[in-house]
Length: 293
Image (tube, rainbow, N blue to C red; front, side, top):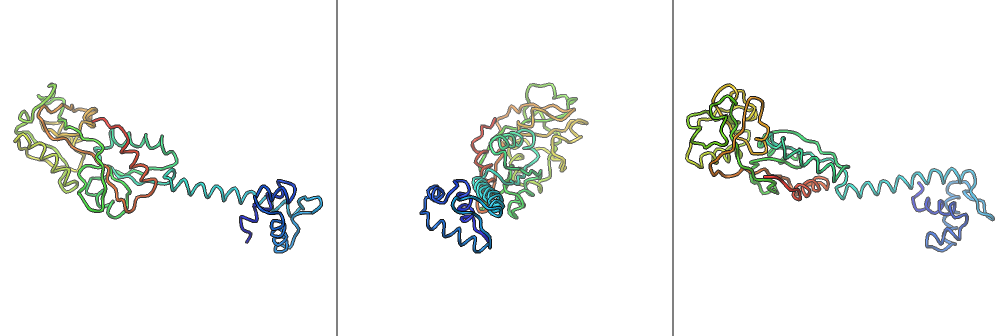
């Protein structure tokens, strides 16, 4: 096996047309350079150079041609490794909740594609409870979520805090208003996802609704809440973060809530103990972005 150092020596002599000039280029004395190339020729069983004048033999030309390719590949390997270490290449497995898909996720993916084009982001949609488990089992690198439980192994950053908006059917008697108070919805069914798919997020939203003292009967379904057919068909309602309220599903309208309610956060959650350089680059980028609230 010929090491890269000897390949560089032979290529330098071929490029410079002589041992002395090659030694100067390599910042070494000429006698050791000549000796090591003679030792290589002895090991290979061929002459690489004719001397006086110095010129490549036919075997020498074959060696130099192949050595140039090997040296270029080695340089590419080093650079590729360094780029991966800087988070400029690689794959990030990103999990996100349905409510982040409309605005937050596309904003992050577009910024990542601009800043780190060599990084591929593989995305999967899931509820918070499933994302929590996937993080713990290291099946995803980062979660874009609401209501992932606090755990010692996690680091987290709040990306945006959003007010809630009401979504109801466009034929609902309340649909024509500019805004709505929760007391106006008294006696109506609240459509929401089941608590077990995202316990912390469920509790945060229900807690926000109770902030004014109102209580609502909850109809639960795993279909993300703004997509419920019940909204279009009757007088039921749901609530969504403002980033989802701008384009409600067909047959529904979204209205600002006029009560002073707590906001709902969307967070980036990750495990520092297993964060790859490319995933770390995504986290750093997300924390620098300007998010509308």
